[in-house]
Image 1 (cartoon, one colour):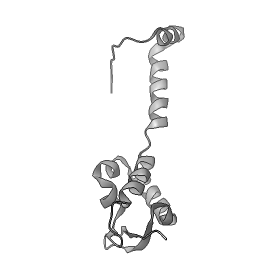
Image 2 (cartoon, helix red, strand yellow):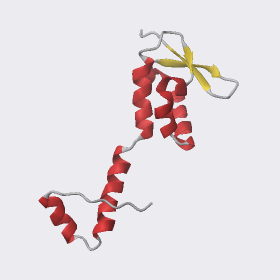
Image 3 (cartoon, rainbow, N blue to C red):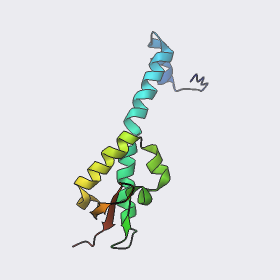
Image 4 (cartoon, rainbow, N blue to C red):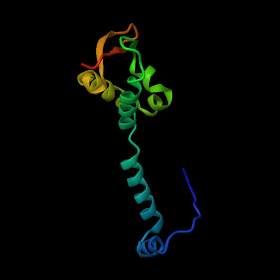
Length: 116
């Protein structure tokens, strides 16, 4: 994808860009590093599950995707969904839930547990 941007920058950024051998590549590298550091779908899913589980009635059976919602769930690629699911299953107490069983579609079913 080709992207052209035209914006005003601070004097410090302008000076930094002027020092770069390939300004376009340097700016792209900085933007990519920022996105990698700040775009964390698994972290977002973890935070969403921890928050939204608190809103559920105790003993309600659910799949993770139902609780965190389609916006957060769809940001996870298949590998991240599997990794996140394994993490939740291995650490259910971190989320205030317990594993119940596998659904007919082979998804994990959980329920919220009462705090002790």
